[in-house]
Amino acid sequence: MFTSVDGGSVIKDRYVNVFPNASVDAKLSDKTNAYFTYSSRINRPSYQSLNPFIIYQDAFTSIQGNPNIQPAKVHALEVGGAMNDWSLKLGYNHTIDPIDGGAFQSEKDSRVYILRGTNLSRKHAYFASMSNNVNLKWWRSINTASISYDHAIDDTGVFGTNTNQPYYYVYSQNSFDIKNWVTFYLTGWYLSNKQDGITFEKDYSSVNIGPEKKLLNNTITCNLDFNDIFYQVRAAVEYKLGITDIVYGRKFTTNYIRFSMSYNFGNLKKFNYQNKDVGASETQRVQ
Image 1: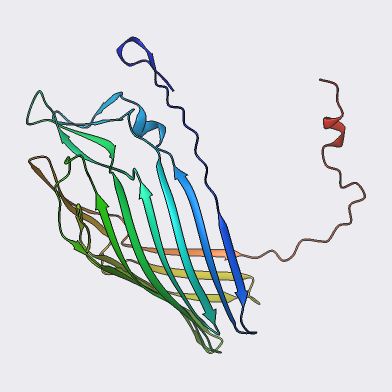
Image 2 (image 1 turned 135 degrees about the vertical axis):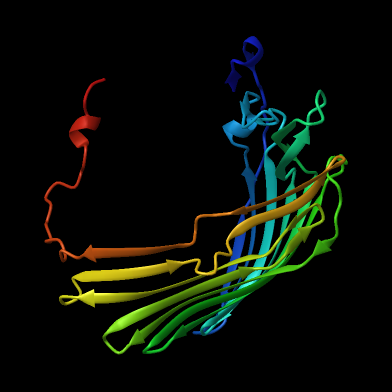
């Protein structure tokens, strides 16, 4: 990577890693199956998070990349199965050098903070999830509930430590048919308070409702969406960085009402093409 900061420099970072993957599936009966998977992957930092060029937000806050960030390596184990309309899975993720970040206090001025990414030492994540589908004549539903436990570890002592706490997540997507007149959609999810040993994240949720009406032999579809009706989608986080307690709370513009209409022109005519070698004349050209 090249940068023009400080008269120009080259940031070199070469590495070789192997990421094996394996999976085993077993069909126990016509309605029951089980599986086991092991996967590994690499999560590389973005260019912006590496670029040391400073972007000022105000007189006391700036954003600066960290060229020393290392890619995160993830090893994941998962076992699960399905029976009829139910499914269950258990898993564990081990992340080496997970990428995190925070508001670092400037060494030159205690009033100045720099938002910069960094690596933690490792992170352990355990989870269990159960799902169920409902398919009735008038009601269709997809439901998921999960519980997780994360443990982030920072051996450098940059971040302050906190207690760990399991957290849970529930999700439900439903559609209800009122005869042949209208279909109502109801979607809701909730994520509880989350503590991974370093960061505390407050709970948040969303509930969305809306009717759908089809007209003129289903060629026109009208939707009225009420999104995040309780205005509960937010990012409220607390953590300790050095001697500084970082606390922030943000609300997002997810609370809205939207009307949409679409028209279906029907299926395209079926064509039988004689020549299916697309671009053959171009590939045979002499360069």
